[in-house]
Image 1 (cartoon, helix red, strand yellow):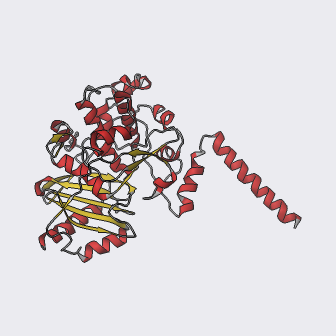
Image 2 (tube, rainbow, N blue to C red):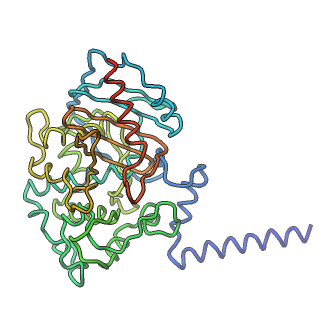
Image 3 (cartoon, rainbow, N blue to C red):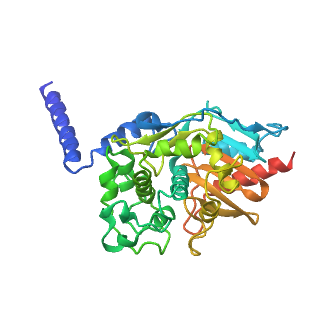
Amino acid sequence: MKKLKKILIGFVIVIGLMILSLYIFKKDYLLRAVRVTYLNGHSTAFLDDYKYFDNAIIQKSNQPQPWNLAKDYNKVKPTSKLEDLHKEMGTVAFVIIKNDSIWNENYYDNYAAASKSNSFSMAKSIVSASLGKAIMEGKIKSLDQKVSDFFPEFSKGKSAEMTVGDLASMASGLNWDEAYYSPFSITTQAYFDDNLTPIILGLKGIDTPGKTYKYLSGNTQLLAMCIEKATGKKLADYVSKSFWKPMGAESDALWQTDKKGLVKAFCCVASNARDFARFGKLYLYNGKWNGQQLLDSTFVAKSVRPRFKESPQYGYGWWLSQYKNKPLFYMRGHLGQYVIVIPEDQLIIVRLGNKENKGTIENPHSKDLFVYLEESYKMLGAH
């Protein structure tokens, strides 16, 4: 019995020293990561994890604008291949919007039309839209305004020439490690830490900005901080006033924040497929919503074109590709969150779910993306 007691005491001491060392080496965010992620049976951030964080509210519209339902709404069943993929990938929402009307929608795993789930990096497109709005309102001079105008921490070295446009187009040259599954990466730290600001302001320029594309979540976080300084508003409030309300969003959205109230701008807007789709429609119509110009059309056009020839997959906050020679652009998030827009066919497809088939260096687009497109077109062709 005494031996067992000694073992237990020793175990408690070891655990205590481990926890103490995490605080000493400023890795205490790992405690929260373990509590939120692993103790809920996950190995990475997950769809419903917003419930475990502080959140700012993106307020819904006082005059909601429900989507129209097409005359043949849900008359065509998903193909068997699409249903198999939904099952394999853990899809929770799949919505096809044609000519501004919901043509087909299906929900799985106890999710419904109003159910919230994590956008992950689809939020980057929303931050980019907010940049366009701040430029349109004259709060930010242009895409070429220096980041150092807002944060003098970036006024020296290679970052001295870094612009807000470089942040939006993933060309900052900053030293950020985009590793989602490593517990020690800065991406993981930013996701779980109590205070984002010193993490972001501690970044250093290691490459010349504005020259090449490199996807870094820290770029979007810093961009959001610049927008908040320029507008004098919390980003969740700015998005509500600029987009969520005028676009008639039917539900409040939640945006995860650190303990200081700063939104995790590189990710983490919790909303539903119907409301996420509104950003697709806004960009489909070149920044115009029901006759009101919410975003400058020139900014929208620039956003959905590649900045760099060598990196045709990305514009300013939007992913870019083609399907059967038809240009498309899309919002994209971890685990396969998509709002896909094919302007030529007046088509918007939203997919939310738990898994994705990741792309490769040669093809950065996830494999499942094109299956969703192919099967959706089969359904449309069958009607």
